[in-house]
Length: 188
Image 1 (cartoon, helix red, strand yellow):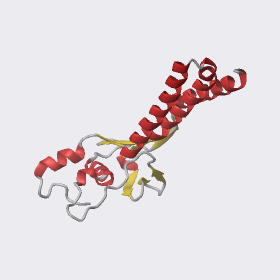
Image 2 (tube, rainbow, N blue to C red):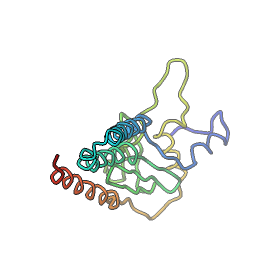
Image 3 (tube, rainbow, N blue to C red):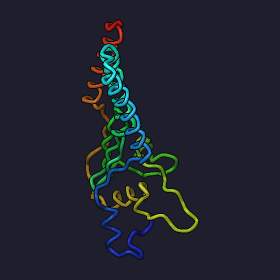
Image 4 (cartoon, rainbow, N blue to C red):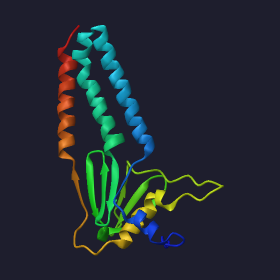
């Protein structure tokens, strides 16, 4: 691991060791594009007075919005000195640094656990682009920041856990049920 204090003193350490949330900026843009399109369809139908369209398609459009929220907004990586939390749509992985062997940044951020299990971070940022004219700031590289946090962590007895995001799953099931009901029961 690179010494993060060279040339920057303690200032660079502070930037590396503060809690961080990592997301790909392109996914945030994608989420807002989907939200804008869904809002356009619903507002357009309301302005035109297409109440049957609204009755039939509001729940399916909300289901699409929920899916976009899961994939583009909710999926993320949070890291601090205690460990990392990787949220991949409906799965949440709580990873204390003592169970992490390494963090790798290739096309996608990947956490390798002690024992070899790999967790790909769906919402993690893409690697920074390397430019010919200047070196990217290391604090922008998620893998370097997470490795610095891992190295600064105090030993812990906690183990890595994974579980389903039950509230988000229940919202999806409810929206799916409403979608099926509205599409099958509302007739023009």
